Amino acid sequence: MPLPQDGHVHSQWSWDALAGSMEGTCERAVEIGLSSLAFTEHADFTPWTLREDTEIPDAWRVLVTDGVLTPPELDLDGYLECLQRCRDRFPDLRILSGVELSEPHRHGHRFDRVLRAGRFDRVLGSVHSITAGAGFDEVSGLYRDRSAATVVRDYLAEAVRLVEGYDDFEVLAHIDYPIRYWPAGAEPYDPAAFEEEYRAVLRVLAGSGRALEVNTQVPLHPQIVRWWHREGGQTVAFASDAHEPALLARGLAEASAMVEACGFRPGAHRDDFWRRA
Image (tube, rainbow, N blue to C red; front, side):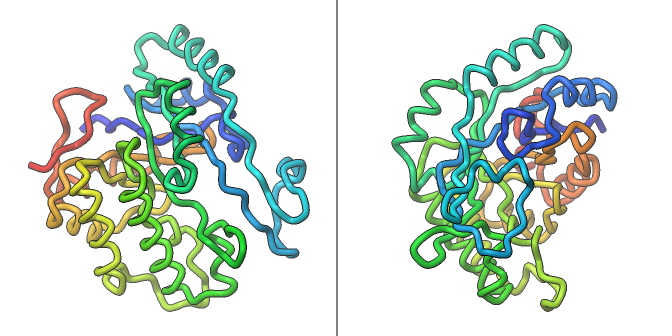
């Protein structure tokens, strides 16, 4: 089976993709036979409070003032110009424009302006940070003060607020984002321990008519896709979440086989979401 579209890819236009390259990623797509991808660059407006012992790349230090990291705004003009150059250079590769909105339910009016200016083909909604004290902490840092189970439940509650609080995105990204940082000393992760919370997110997402992303940075557990089907979810999108060319389409072959086993099938065209059978 051909690889499905990689609908969540980052290049140098995402502030956290230090090894990103749009042209290099397109070259990699041609090399591996991927026919379609979406460059969904980060648009982040939530400042993160850093702990004193937080380690960050040197390139990010210019973004920190008084212990708070403020992500830079997406350079839309530069991004769109680069996207067009890649479309011209790789005419047989379907390259979608896109954006990943971090916590848009907190910054709706600012994201409205981004969407009007970009006119994107693909819009993702995601959660990367949660309230911590008087500010916000990136999810990976929450494990220092909260149990692993509490972090997951707090994250999924925020995901519900995202889906209910902002309409203008079509795919919910990485529903299992906290699992990327699961502490080594915690009990092994079992999605069944969070069934109620996962299904609450999936229920409101299905009711909104939007798609669930199957993100392969940490392979999404098949049980979550089965719950998505049972809650009435209609569509699935695939995502490597690659931040460098070499990681493009990682795990998509395995993910597509898993999703098919859970009751979803490819759409009629290469850009289509997969749909329930």
